Length: 462
Ligand SMILES: Nc1ncnc2c1ncn2[C@@H]1O[C@H](COP(=O)(O)OP(=O)(O)OP(=O)(O)O)[C@@H](O)[C@H]1O
Ligand SMILES: [Mg+2]
Picture 1: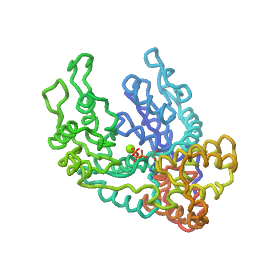
Picture 2: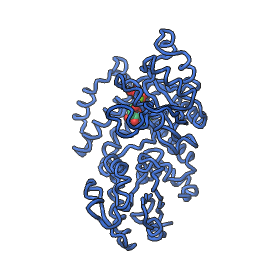
Picture 3: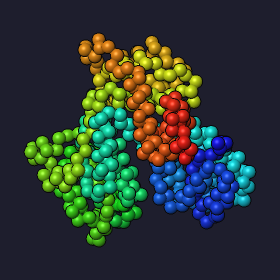
Picture 4: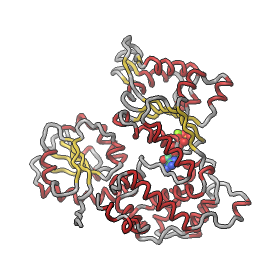
């Protein structure tokens, strides 16, 4: 058995500019389980990077070029950055949030790098335990598993996909998953646009972009959404809200595969995969004359239906709830607490959530934050939160006997773990990433459900 160090199982992203720090860092980490990934061109999106426990090592020489991207990493994902090089007035890392900035000289020694990285690993692991991964799509019920199957089937086709479902059911999650699973477009950006929130008169400049000098204030050229999504996925949310005249323009772009910026006469080729979502019934809108039939047929080549939470059954509801609560409580706190009381899951199972997963998630997060603050599962306080949640309980549900028995719930989680391990060739690192939990939590779950003992020879793979 391998003895692990605090730095094992790490992805180290290095953005080196004109230095040789990638090679030197790789040598320093050679005996450890560390992937040193060169990130100069930021081909990997920040979300993807931060979905894994990671630290960025950045040469100060790239500060000018990469300022925005790094800010995003740090502010959004709390990813620590080790700045390498001599700090001058123009490239002062002090302009970055101090709690995430660390400095090493350009001629750092292995001991210095390893010392700093092992200190930061503790910070990274604590943070990653609290950050829900953008990758997770929790699916226990048959209807959700069928949807996952369809996503797999259609992920790699290049046609448009229409995602239909009630509000808060996870349509955007489905779109993200389609994007990630596409072999080619997943390397490109995922651009999400809410068609219901486009201010009047801004459609053209937002979608088509403009050339420099196209109008007063256009001091630099700007790419519109179509161009921004080039090589990736354009996700048009609330497509049913797009006014008719904008529908015509969208259709034209889909047919021509090209856009012309405002103030320019030169069309630019664009290649993206379109995923649109709506909670409205588009065929009805077509009948009413508010949605173009030709656009509808173009969009709905493949139609995926995301079931409402009520249609998924109780186990889905409980597993979602438990996952969101655990993320909000945080891994460290959770380790010091007894397991979530069963009455809590049962109460949630008997509630209705018209706002679907989003509403369930809000409640779970309120509960998780309370438990985190108080350090216990205080029944009186939590019942008050449940009562104030606004989710409706029907009379029949209130008097109903327990809906799921515990063993069924455990079995569901166990089979979910095994399915995820299977999908990831039994690599714990990838499995934890897919499930949106840390490797430590995954390890504990494997022990709890005795998957380690039964499948031990396969687990050696990681
Ligand atoms: N199966 C799931 N697993 C994990 N999280 C989920 C799942 N489904 C939804 N969520 C979470 O629930 C929230 C709502 O999801 P999302 O925004 O994708 O819904 P939507 O259908 O696009 O909603 P709307 O109709 O309001 O646009 C998000 O926080 C999302 O992360
Ligand atoms: Mg949405």
